[in-house]
Amino acid sequence: MSEHDSALGESPKAEPESTLRIGIVTLFPELFGSFVETSMVGRAVKSGNLDVLFEQLREHGLGVHKSVDDTPYGGGPGMVLRVDTMTSAIEALSARMDSPRKILLSPQGKRFEQADARRLSAMGDLLFICGRYEGFDERVRGAVDEELSLGDFVMTGGEVAAMAMIEAIARLRPAVLGNAKSADDESFSAGALEYPQYTRPVEFRGVMVPDILRSGDHGKIDLWRKNASAVRTAERRPDLCDGEKTNETS
Image (cartoon, rainbow, N blue to C red):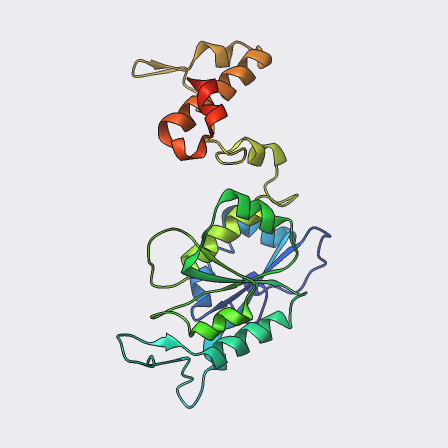
């Protein structure tokens, strides 16, 4: 897979109007190989609903060894990604896209949530910038539009975070998920956890599928699911409940 080609390295195809174009600046584009070839993301790429572009940061490195980092001013452990090489990669990839929103992936960023996935899914091109080592030169932040974090923990690089966010965003786009209602019913879609799901067999080791789900009464089923979602959210994620929701489920 060429770092400067679309995902899967296939010949360009006519793009649907709903195509979501995502760019990724990374030292390791090969980490995304299986991600862009399998499951929902792979299907979206093959159908033309999703286009993923890569910019190999190393190609913007300096000197014989294509160095992209250096020791930090003031001392300290590790290496810091240089602002000149990072900016060069961001600008090169931006030039191949349509005014993308540039997103820096960092543990210092805002925690990524479903609301962010919905917000970004409604935008145009998106460009994700993956870090490595001890982080970025502070001046890199002046070249981006926002900074996002996957959570309050530290990873070696931003590639895994980028994959998680891209999947969360892409599946909200028309024609990507297949069944648009699926995204509406899932956890966090309405600020709550999803209701319990069941399938065959009806009984397994003494645990039965609730009778209401087999009743055929869709009005009662919808009410059961709404109540079950509220109870589960209050029990497992009370931080998602405002005072009104808590009173309704008590």
